[in-house]
Every structure is written in C-alpha cells, then in structure tokens.
Length: 354
Image (cartoon, rainbow, N blue to C red; front, top):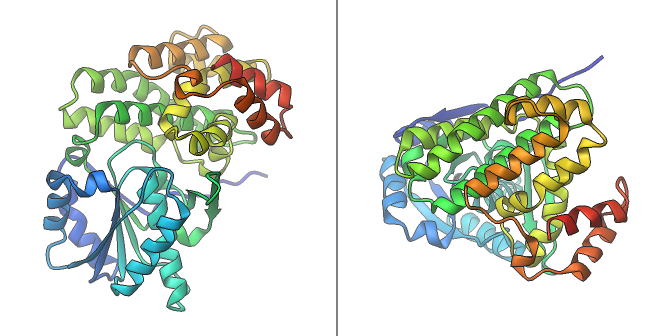
C-alpha cells in the first residue's frame, strides 16, 4: 500500500497584480495587526514594500523585522521578540527563502509565547524561486555558522501569493539561480526513493517548464508573464517536500552553503549536475526518463549534461573554487556527511564541482 500526504499550503494565488488579494487573505485568516518579515534590501525597496502596504488596506503593519541570508538564529529570535511585543496577530513574509523560513519560526514561536496551540497565520509573498513557502520546514544558521532546521506542521504558511510584478525587482542573477534551485527540487523529487506518481508528473512538468522559461526570463527580464511561468514551474517542483529537501544535492549544498556564505540557489548550480552524474550509476532508469524532460532523451548521463548546459547558458556559477573553498574544506564536509553515502563518494562529487 502507498500513500501521498499533501504538504503544500492550502491556498496559492498567482498572477501579475495578485498582491491585491492580500487584504482579503488577511481578513479570511482573522488577522488585524500585521507583522512584516523581510530583508533589509527588500525593506528598502519602496516599489515593492509600498505596494504591499497599500494592499493591506485597513490592516495596519505594526512591525517590520528583517533577517539576513541563511536566517541567523539570533536575528530570528530578535524578530520573534519584536513581533510579539508589537501585538501582531498575523505574519506576512516578503522576499526569498531566508525571510520566509524566519517568518515560519516567528509565527510558531510567538504563538507559543502566548499559549496558543496554532501558529500565527502566515501569508508568504515570495520574490525568488526558492519555494521555501511551500513547506513546513524552516532552515536557519546557528551561532557556529552551521545550517540547521526545524520541521513542524504548524509552520506551514496558510497562504502564498505569487505576484510576478513584485518579483521584477529581484536581481536577475538571484532570480535565475533560485530557478536552478527549483530545478534541483524537481530533479530530487523525481529521484526520491519510494512510489510517488502524483509528484512525479508535476516534477517532470516543472523540469520542462524551467528549461523553457528560465532562458526567456534572462532574455526578457522585465516581462511579468514569463516570471509568472517561472513561479508556476517552481511551485510544481516542490510537492514532495520532505524527501526532496533530504535529497543528496540539497544536503551537500547546505553543508557548504551557510558555512561559506553561498546562497542556496548557487549551491544547486555548483552541485546538481555532478550529483546527477553520480546518481546515474545508481538510478539509470529514472535519469534516462528525466532526460526526456531536460532534452532529447539522450540517456542517464545526458540529463546531467543538459542541466550543466542550462546553468552555463544562464551565466550562473559552476565552480566551488570561485568561493574560496578548496579540497581541505570539501574533505571535511564530505566526512561530516558520510553515512548513506561514503565519504569518498561525496568527496568525489565535491571535487568534480571544484
């Protein structure tokens, strides 16, 4: 017997101008005093935050808190205290994976402080393609600089609004690299152990859509229709959230990302083709099928080559060495991750990406 558990938010809105639905979502969720969780760069962009505040209509924004890349735990804890002190009863996250993950933790921890069983309602407004908004897990960086995480069903956002017009302010390199992160989600979802026919269909469609529309986003960076297509593909990439987040490319990327200041989208650019080549020897039939979505069906290794070609065509990073990391750091990372895969195999993947 098999089972599929739906783990995405219950309400997802999309399309240019859909931020206009924010007030309705706040009202539907019973909110009246909103806290905004974002980054300093997004908070300073009046073109984005101004539209969001206008869309809140009669619900005041009683607090704005910011977090940095990889959601440092100290910043998340301060944000929790500030949101609680402001008396907010609903959280809106705006930006990429770091503020969205931080908002998940804030919404749950503020509710815990107040003795509430459920977390504060959370509306996520993503401006990248990292799709942190689609899962109940949240990553953060501990005091030692290591990536850690929490998983709690109470942290799943209640609503997501994909407004491509807000996403036009996202730097193109960041947009495209998080698009590769979405591709990584789709690939690792398809390669996950077990039987998951529902998510397989969506993952393969996500791969096709991303291969078609990411180059269009590079060629036409001001086109909201194309960015909406990117957002839909990213959504479809992440319906099997738990196993996907535990995929090899994700785990290896997290191991070096926070510690060395490399964004998650970039770690996928660096590692995904090499992980796929490694997996081709273990899952040849799945990679062969995947190659029909990435290209012309050239077989297990062709899928990895197609992905590497897309990353190169988008002008995105391809070498770990560009981030000041060498073999000693990679050997240590491989040793710390060894278990299901040997340290030697993991090091070989890292070195191939060096």
